[in-house]
Amino acid sequence: MALIKKFRIKSFKVDETIVELKNISFFYNKRQILNNLNLKIKKQEILGMLGPNGVGKSTIFNLITGLKDPNYGEIIINGINCTKLPINERFTKFKIGLVPQYGGLIHDLSLIDNLKLVSEIHIEDKGLRIQKIDKLISQFEFDSLLNIKAKHLSGGQKKKLVIALSLVNNPKILLLDEPFAALDILTIRMLQEVILNLQSSEEISVVVCDHQARDLLNCVDRAIILSNGKIIASGSPSEVISDQEAKTQYFGDEFNIN
Image (cartoon, rainbow, N blue to C red):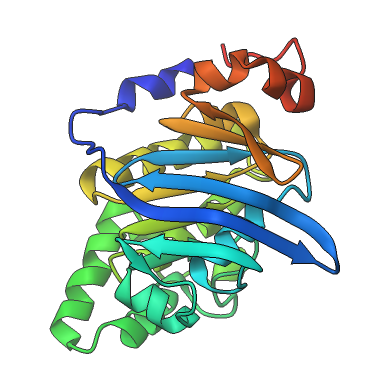
């Protein structure tokens, strides 16, 4: 997967925090999922989250979007404490986009009708809706797929469509929950390029959570490794795979991304 690295563009990135999770603790049925966790997400960075099942990766997404509330701590977005803000306000005020692992589209509608439906929810002006749809069709090369029902699209085509739908409201923060799951190598590479292009052309901060560690590490600027409710390693892909605690609790000694 080394080919993906040639798509990296770093000159436009800024050292400014867009999302901060501050002293976050979260319990589920008396089980502690996150333990006094602190995390900063920078503007226009691609951040990857790795860790065993049940370690809290999806919980972090749910806390950022407001689907769940922390037991302790604060969620700061663009310098504003939004811990108590409802979901709809977070998505609209702070321009959050979410690509779920499953679903995210209407299977019995065609690709073009999915785009039209979501654009009607987010964009009042008809002319602007048409412009946005045309841009997404061109950006994702949907021209030959417009009249195909979503349920008949391939796994990669469905994932591209869900990502396109998440971009209708011009998000500045995009959360991708296991985008590489159950996809073939070429489709994964295509999605990696899509993610990198979103960062550079749309100036979006992207957070990716996945179990496909190599695929994730090949397209992120920074990665964090979660274990026992805490971040045990953080840094560039090469830094986290060299971290001894990350090796012990997640990667093992033989893991590499070459």
